[in-house]
Length: 116
Length: 118
Image 1 (cartoon, chains in turn cyan, orange):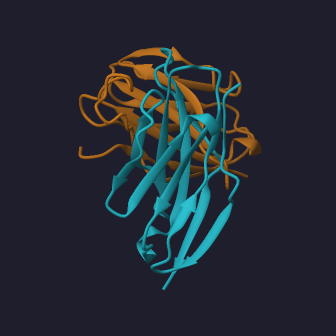
Image 2 (tube, one colour; image 1 turned 135 degrees about the vertical axis):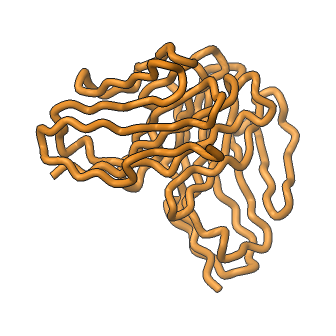
């Protein structure tokens, strides 16, 4: 079975704090893709990153960084120096690589609230 | 258009009523997905189109749900005889290519249609 678990339902931080959102996944596939999406109050899902299972390099994009550890089946997301505009629900997702059209299996989401 | 457009933005239906939800993907996008997002939950896959072909409908919860994309662009998700458990946000996403072929792999999502069945 394939599953994504985001154990943190809600996180509240004060602006400029660093925050890490956890994501643990389960899959029997050897090749797969992992994603993070942001869902602001407007409702649309905004793509943040995709990682391939065969590439365990961590990635940094501005204040955002991602730590992919295949050994622990985790793909955690860190926001450095958080800002109020980062407040949103964040979803981690898994996509099997075999050709199912790349459908996404989402976690339940972590609601991040950044207070001024 | 610049993004994925969904209409209507909000829909209230009486139980037993049929509804049709529309998705206008980004022009030229090959792949189109429908997801259902219940309140406080992550989106759940419903169905996938590659151009006009519906390649995966394994996520449709019952035979009351039907989706089509006859010309490979606009898609309609139809729900017959709506039930209260159908209340959710229905999200549409499109992608230029299959995820394995896309440089970034990300999908573009619309803002969704919030369906409330009363």
